Structures are given as structure tokens and as C-alpha cells.
Length: 285
Image 1 (tube, rainbow, N blue to C red):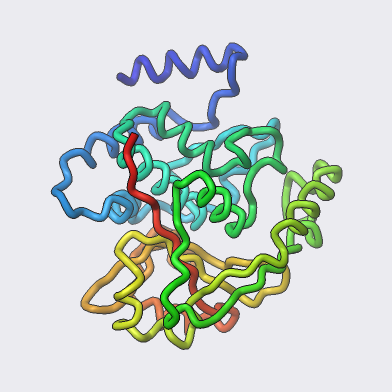
Image 2: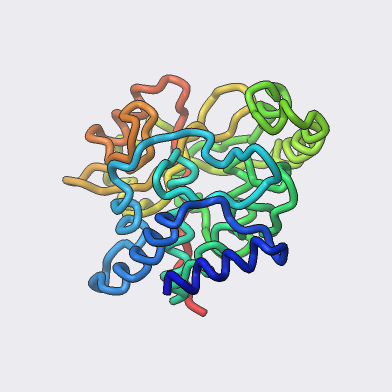
């Protein structure tokens, strides 16, 4: 199997398509996990199964940034909160569709990470998680849970402009000032959209959350930091009747299941305002 995978990458490198930026160990990890998931018992939370396979992987930011042309990056050895969510979601999508190959994983990752699934320069990558939710809802990959009310008692009005106002914080924008206008246009399209969410004050109400949050749901933490929509991402884990967060943690410097509850975690971060809940759709082809 692996000989075929790397032969395919060699063909891609000859110019038919841009090959992914990855190491051989990444394809080995992906193929191993797609094999192991087929042996899991019925009723297993597939997203949570995959997320737990990355526990202990080092937290490293900015792994998607390359020095040259924008290309798909696969890095299962180093993860941040977004790449953990995307890697697990791509593996889950492959499983639900019964497509257990490296090529299927690459397609799933490309389709969710890039606008309309097309890699066409840095601005084509989806940078704000609200747009990630919107695109992947349109394609049927995920659904955002916004009812019932309660616990979805608050509304987030998206107002994003952080990237265009702080281009010096992004390698690609420092190198290519022309990208800033494309990013600003995208931000303007996102801003003004409204989404129901669970405010921080209700996240401690486990009985309410049990009705709407499942193991393996994506938790997107809303914030009041100027210009941003989402501060952090992870996966829902129910433990001893309480909701916890499995995430690539900058604090712990690795992927962990937070020992504190999600309610306690949010209280530790004054800028966090609540959570949006996104579910990976289960469907087959």
C-alpha cells in the first residue's frame, strides 16, 4: 500500500498536481488509523476515537506556513488547535464514507481547508473558523447546533478584521502585501453574520448541555477579542457527568484532555464568552 502512495506523490511532483507538504510518517500514521478504526465496536464516537490517538502530540503553531507556493500541509507530528480539528475531521469523514486511503484523506483535508476545495494561493485557505463552519455546512460535512433555547441563549454577531489590521503577524501577509486586500474582502463578507451560542454562564449546567453536546462534537470557543470570532477549538468529552475539552493546548504544550471541566476552563480565560457546537455529519457514499 505504502509503495503505491509514494509512487502517486512522485507523479504529482512531476507537475500534474502539487504534492502535499508532509513526511512519510504522516501517510503511515493516517493509513494506520484508518485501518484501526475499522475494528472499533459499534457505538464508538469516531471523532473522539481519532482525537485520542493524538494525545501527547506536541503543540506547535504555524505548521501550515510554507516558504514558497501555498500547498496542502499534512503534519500529524505537530498540531495546533485548528490542525487537530481538521486532521480528526478528515479522518472521520473518510471513515463515514468508507474511504480508507491516503488519497481520500488528502482530498477530505483539501476540501475542508480551502475555499471550494481549491488550493489557489494563501487567500484561498480558510482562515477564520466561522467561514470554515459555513463552507463545510454547505458541503454537508458538518452541522452547527444552535437549538434548543436554552442553552443557546446568546447570539454572536461576527466582526472579523484581525488579519487585515495586523498583517505583520502573518508571514504570508508580510511577504505579499497584495494578499491583504483579498483577506479584507473575505472579512467583510463574514462580518455581520449571526449565530446562536451557549454563553459561558450556562456551560456549567451539565444537564442542559447533555441534551445538545455529544462526545466528539467540535467545540469552538467564542471570544471578545477585537477582530476575532473564535479563540480556541477542541473536542467535547463527557467524563463523570461533566463536559471536558480535548485540545491541542498551548499551555500544556501538547494534545491533552483537559483535567478541569470546560466550565472551569472558560472561567480561567476572561476573554472567552461561550461555545459554539459543531457536529461532523455521519453519512456514507
